[in-house]
Length: 68
Image (cartoon, rainbow, N blue to C red):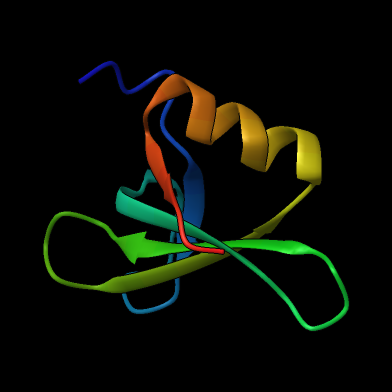
């Protein structure tokens, strides 16, 4: 998979920045925002808050699935 289109997030466990998120699922927050959750490929859970445009683009590119 092309890692340039993957959602990148901060991994709290390993303290690494811009880690590609695997098996990302986009969900809507209670206030109407968008959030991606997945893992870093090593089993560490990750989450990222993003804009509507970025979330819908990730779904369109096929790097994330729609969870709402």
